[in-house]
Length: 288
Image 1: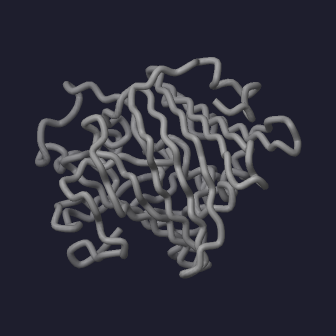
Image 2 (image 1 turned 180 degrees about the vertical axis):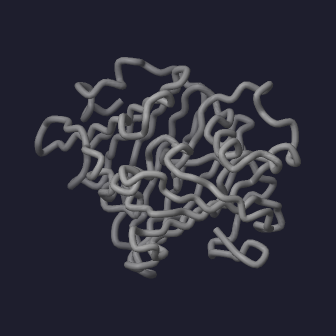
């Protein structure tokens, strides 16, 4: 979802896009609970997994059953800050399903805008529901698949970027192990399996760099429908919170428009008590 979790000994990564060995590397992706017995025991075992199983390990990485945070989004045009957004984030997992709430508190022109994501791992990504509440309309509407390419409150993150990770939407090819900031990572090329995936995301393919020890995507390149490099996501800072390595700063750069979004995450808590009634489309627009 909107913010990702990174287990890494480094507390700050470079703010510039680096090459991975001879090459280089969406948050906005957190993961549900993974039973310890299901997780590969070490890095070599992770590295030996097929790309599909590696991505499943990323999806189901342990990070508690619920999480909340305050998020600041900075919208940049080149080196100029255009605007900021303040977002309250709340999420819970129940078995194979996940509900996510976002409430925008600032600025005033978008305050009260709310989103509810409802995902079920046993259903196809086409069945994932996103409800958007706009204060001016005073009602929530469900986004159609084609509208998930829309920009989230003017940022470089689209609604599809914020959905639960769906490894089955893409076919994968491993490009082998390379180095990322002195860490061995696995480079994967992901190609959209169906036209419905392309319709929903606008991405014909992605290049991912996965840390096999910590079961995390550390960066992503996104390619548009014509195969041109469109966006680049990279991590800039990580911190350990409640014994979980957590990305607290990342960015998404649109390489075609020159616009970028910088994300700062704070006040993060895991395994928080959650009121189930909040995850209801009728409750959207109400600050919790």
